[in-house]
Length: 400
Ligand code: ATP
Ligand code: MG
Image (cartoon, rainbow, N blue to C red; front, side, top):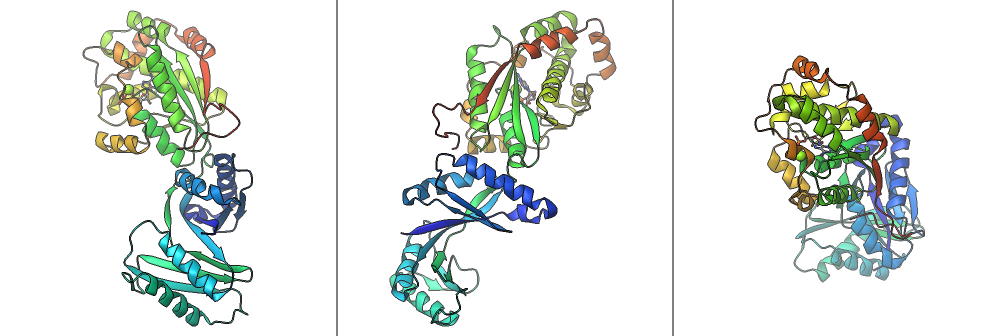
């Protein structure tokens, strides 16, 4: 089959008015990045659609397999081409219908005749192609309204172009079109899903993780690195900041009454995340918090934690049920990593009965006996930074 190009539809993008050029430019850059190993590829941007020409027959399949993971693409269709010879057109039409993987029982042909000197009228060509396809697929019937398969034929000066399949894209907005935020990435199920949700809304990510050796093992750190790597497969690199948190956690154990130590721990994490955010030029902080899931996720608790900063905290999972979060985690392939049994720094220090309704004044009062500032500064300075995907060679390896 002579697959010529892929037609890409933006959907939500094309409704963005004056921002449109910035959005389509970003999508184009992201597609380039995702296909950096295919330098011959051409991208042609039009007002409300885009064409990709792989320009190498054998790469078409590869391109089609990566496109469903790029945000900002509503749907796409492989386009076949042939000469304007009628036999060639009929033959190609059959092969295009044959190439569709899903089953279809009903069918119609639509013809667009952009090249006016073409000898057949629109209706004539429709009939010719339609009856030829039906002869070759006796099990399908013509249906004008909502057929399973719509074969679109466009006659241009340089040849005939055909598509018959609309493949669902990832939707959302191109990564980077909505700035950058910092994701608080634990080893749990929720935070990678929260990061994915924001990537899908076009937000670029840095991630921050707090670990407390020797209470937490290298394995738990590796787990978080694997999660960051999984997130980087959605088409943009992810920088992970790993914060040494042991000293601060031990100090909290000493200074703060046990039933509010969880709140203080979260507040210290958020303060550090906010410093790293500022340094990296990110605008918001993302967490995997979901209302009512655990003691630290009541509204009272979120209020007491949130009080350390005015930075917007994005909680895309706040109203999600756990099962729905798990379903997404499975879809994006982070679930299996998240359920590896290594302890998180919070789990280890979790008191027997943390307050579900901590009072901000009380927490601030207990914290006032000790200045944590120097320790926070030191933790930020001594952080370890890794960037994902790790490029093993020059060939881009960052997509699913
Ligand atoms: P998750 O599944 O994301 O770990 P959780 O249900 O276990 O969430 P908590 O442990 O209360 O909930 O954590 C709430 C949020 O705080 C997490 O989603 C994450 O954004 C952040 N967080 C918790 N622990 C860490 C950590 N060690 N490093 C970075 N962020 C963390
Ligand atoms: Mg957790």
